Length: 118
Image 1 (cartoon, rainbow, N blue to C red):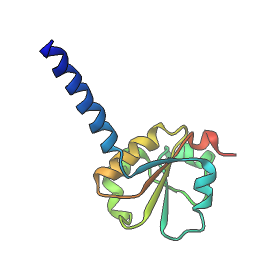
Image 2: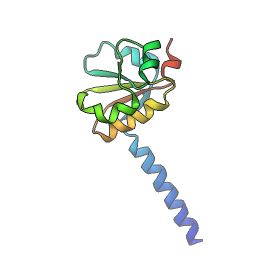
Image 3: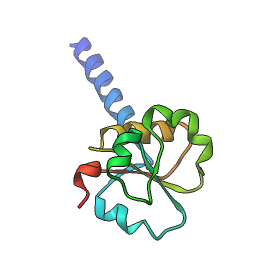
Image 4: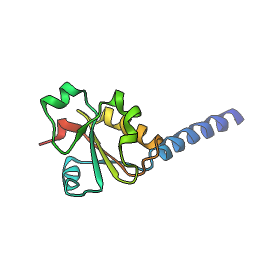
């Protein structure tokens, strides 16, 4: 009986920890991302490979491949919001976590990535 409670508490701590680690990261729609284009306090980052970026991108987004991101965050402004996109939303979610660990506060991940762009 006591072992069950320990397991339940461990699972609860894990879930709460995961939820808290994503604070400051918000998933947004393509439309919400488009609405931020006029805001000068927002940085737009596309974390796809250079070839993916070259074949289809939005000019507002600067290409910083996910593999290069940890070494290039110093070129970004931590006081500005960051909108991150990739092809489907998976790599940009990883990028958002990297940015969060590096001290960025307001990070937006475009849900569905370029696949959702119309």
